Each structure stands twice: as C-alpha cells, then as structure tokens.
Length: 182
Ligand code: SF4
Ligand code: SF4
Image (cartoon, rainbow, N blue to C red):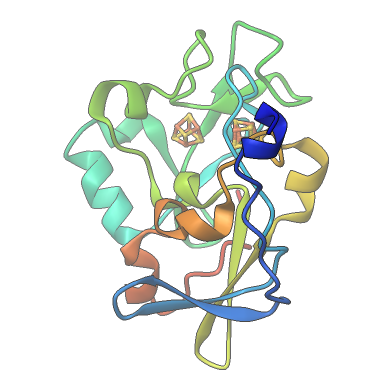
C-alpha cells in the first residue's frame, strides 16, 4: 500500500449549519458556518489589529491590572475601546496610517507578548457573534472572508476549537454582540 493510501483522510463532517455545539460544559453556541472551515493566524498579517477593539467591562479591569489605560483607552458609542494611533510602519496600518495602540512595530501584540493576555474581542476574530432567541450564534465576519489570511490555510478546524475563539465571558454578558466597532 502506498504512503498516500496510508495517510489519514481529513475528518468528514456532514453537519449542515446552523447546528449546536457545546463550547465548554454549560456554554452552547449555534454554529452558522461550514464545519470544515479551518483557521490558523498568519504571521505578519495584522489586518484585524488595525482597528479599535471594544473592551467589555471585565476586559477593561484586566487591562488596567496590566497596563496604564489612560493612554490606551478611549470612549465611543458609550463604550470603552482600545484606541488607534499612527504607526511608523506603513504595512501594518489601515488607510489612515493608524492601528491598534498595542500593535508593535514588530507586527506583534504587546499585550499578548508581554502578558500572555488579550481582550475577548481579539480572541473572537475572525468570528462574529450575535444573540438570537437567547442563544449565542457564531458566524464568520464578512470582512474576514475578504481580509483575514488565516482562513483555510491549515488543518485546525474552527468548529473543533471554539473554546479558543469564544471566551467564557461572552456567556456572562447581557449583549455579547461583536457588531459594535470604534
Ligand atoms: S489588543 Fe493586541 S490582538 Fe487586539 S487588536 Fe490590539 S494588537 Fe491586535
Ligand atoms: S486577520 Fe486573520 S490572519 Fe490576519 S492577524 Fe487577524 S486573525 Fe490573523
């Protein structure tokens, strides 16, 4: 038998979205994307770090425990966001030359690098969350299909790793929607 015949085949998944997944004990989500979709963040992409990040209340407290928030946080739409600032490198910025306050010139997140922590909304990307009839529904952001370089470039199926994308905190919020942006 050849090596190719011995190679494990990619796991099949006949589930048709929407379907329910237990993300962790007691936390269920309704999945609205193709269960065969895979994701692995691509080094040096940084597209999702060019925007302001919404901070849930718990995020703000956790950020304040790690960094000075006076410079890093701004208010908009009655909510707290990590602010954006002009950057030296022009390949890691949006059209206006700015990106997330914590995005370093090396293309890495200073929060993740120094504290092994990042705001909940940064974990959720490239997914999108909304609530329908009391259930958390999870889909892929329209903008991610266009800009996120990490979709379908690995064997890591999103549906098998939802606990990495959807922090427990989301189930504790009155409104965990990811539509509010800076
Ligand atoms: S906090 Fe870090 S991961 Fe989140 S957008 Fe900013 S640089 Fe990116
Ligand atoms: S847009 Fe996608 S690949 Fe690019 S940094 Fe964000 S999550 Fe990673």
